[in-house]
Length: 168
Image (cartoon, rainbow, N blue to C red; front, side, top):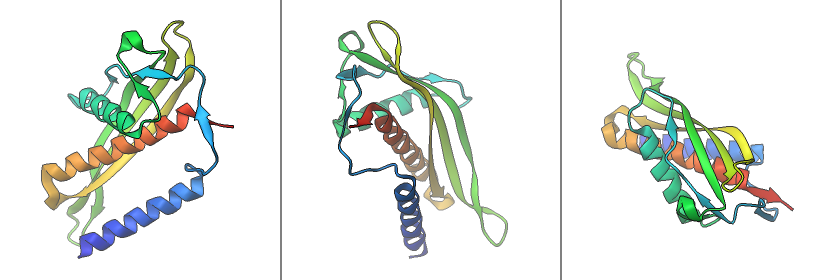
């Protein structure tokens, strides 16, 4: 019960922050010019976390396909490329209990993204740094960490989508 209440409060807090920051808007928008089709090559990993580039690139690609704002295609068919470099991966304690033992952990990921015109190589957007974060409780184990990574990845996808849509 405690965990459910804490998660609900966490979600509520995030929604308040997102609404306050103006990330979401009811204003109509359109894709930036040159973003009809896009390819997502495997991101470069500049962290010490092995394999994070494959996991993050796959998650971002899957979420972009699911969102359907952009049409994801192979690199040789794309108008543009989403290039990414993972600059930071941090895993650490987020909350300590009364006994000073960690009860909750956090996963932070920072990615520098640039969207370039495939034909000319010129940047359409970026480079921009996008951050994502996810938390989990120690008793959730590896499944909790995987879910926290997914939460961070989803926030990064939202940031990427914010870059490709321009207001009218």
